[in-house]
Image 1 (cartoon, helix red, strand yellow):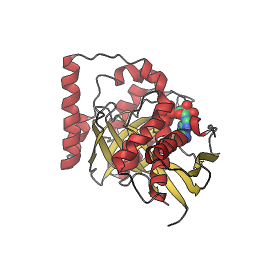
Image 2: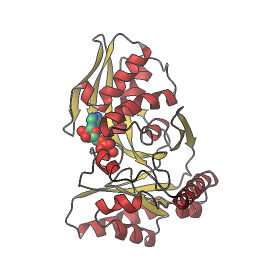
Image 3: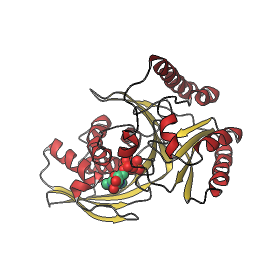
Length: 307
Ligand code: ADP
């Protein structure tokens, strides 16, 4: 067994409109790189972060916090060094912090001969997420570790359900270069919903899960609705309404806010439609004068993986 591995840590789209804090999906082709190696020096050392300005102190970096939680959980006396090659911009809403937290625990577990299962890894990676957003949510780290779509059926105890994605399903994601911190975009949410809102939301959540299992793309599209969080958070995202209307005309099944924003995701059947949706998003954002990135990717089936 090698003492050093390189892993791919996928970007993830959380919430997926109707699954606030419980649903997420992993992207196949967008993500960070991470190098993790065993050392005899106890604890976690972040030796390098390439691509973004992020803290090197283990206690201030989600990779360090998640890794330390794992070492403590196992009572492991030696340590690990971590190099992070950041491609996912922090605060983008496509799980930048989750990629690091998930990558760290997955890689350390691999180097220790996999003593922990994937749900246990999600639980530990959530401690990293707590550092980034003050809430130990699992909707990004679960798909980052399991791959595909995941549903957090319960937080106490943690129960993750892995949902298969139809092969032709593609995600298009636009990241406008304005930073919205998850912690800030949580603050503006209301803490109560009405029964009528609940009924709409769990109808859509059931519809989306059923659509994924039966490969019913129309049902997936109809279920991509959110009457609770999107009306509030979308105010922070330039051209949100226009993007939503126009991507539908371009053939997308539906769209919504990726995680806590500012990224907007759309799901489409087939790469050709997903590329047309990307062009539509680009045309709209070019009129705003804002910088942006656009990604088109199949759903990642594996989550964190060796490279
Ligand atoms: P995202 O949804 O893109 O993960 P968040 O706002 O949830 O965005 O998290 C980003 C925050 O986490 C930033 O304040 C960033 O400085 C902090 N952070 C600490 N370590 C990392 C890391 N390894 N990768 C990304 N963000 C990190």
